[in-house]
Image (cartoon, rainbow, N blue to C red; front, side, top):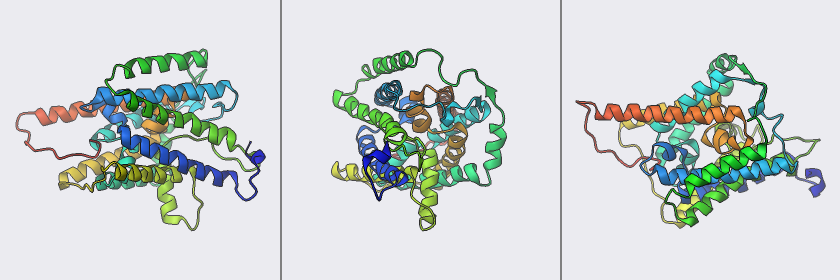
Amino acid sequence: MFESLGFETLTAPQAAVYFALVLGLVFGVLAQITRFCFRRSIVGDDRRQAAGVWLTALAVAVLGTQGAVAMGWIGFAEHRFMAADLPVLAIVAGGLLFGAGMVLTRGCVSRLTVLTGSGNLRAALVLVVFAVVAHATLKGVLAPVRTTLGSVTWSLDSTALPGAPLVWAAVIALAALAVALRSGNRAGTLALAALIGALVPLGWVGTGYVLLDEFDPIAMESLSFTSAAAEALFFTVASTSISATFGAALIGAVALGALVSSLIRGEFAWVSFGSPRETGRYMSGAALMGVGGVLAGGCTVGAGLSGIPTLSIAAILAIAAITAGGLITNRLLSATASAPGAQATTQAALPAE
């Protein structure tokens, strides 16, 4: 479709970068206002309200994405989520690692990106370490871990949930909304969460249909933060040698959107680490998320908010493993803190709070 839009000096890859900037800015603003975070929805003190926000976004994302598929605008048959040989060991191990890291850093990657824009230096450093480790797992010294675990596969007759896609979309959306409407959130908050969810099908349709150019093809993408963080890191250090990508633009725009929103709302504040012990915890969590996000095929947004709407079994397995990793790690930390002889400390405000 892109070639019919009449652009003479703008290529599809260049247009995708501008498109990502718009998506990222809007996501950054909305996520900053709603405190959108998957970690909070499973182990946060306000998990009921946080889950309501996340599930509302998921409901809209599922309905919008599968609606676009039904219209024939996009399809996921060739997408990596639909690989016939499911790398089950990599997905499960990666999900568990990512979930553990998410709890240690007290924020999923999307939340930490938003907090970076809001002045949180702890979140910023976590993002840098996350991006470095993710890139090392994709193409560097940790790549053998990825290829070794990825070689253990499970052949599937169907890579998506069996049955009618629209039926599955309706079931998932109704179940999510049933929980969200009882979460205690204000209607305005859920409306903003719905707008976050609408960005997912907008991303899929934008890159997979509107910007489709057979002579200069681009990848069909939507909101995602693992590969995007690695791309942003690479572009930052080598921008004179490589072109900007959808992912790099998305990460930068999310932080910028959060910055603008936090300044307008009077919530921008510089925050740093309180102790070496705290620093070690966050760096460990960042490294775990970097490895885990690559192995699992995405983060809570890439495999969760954007992945589940594809009805991919791989994406659903990934978000289930991330949830399990987060719950297990949170329980272990709670047990350690309550153990006899544990050092009593006053916990400072942390990035995802």
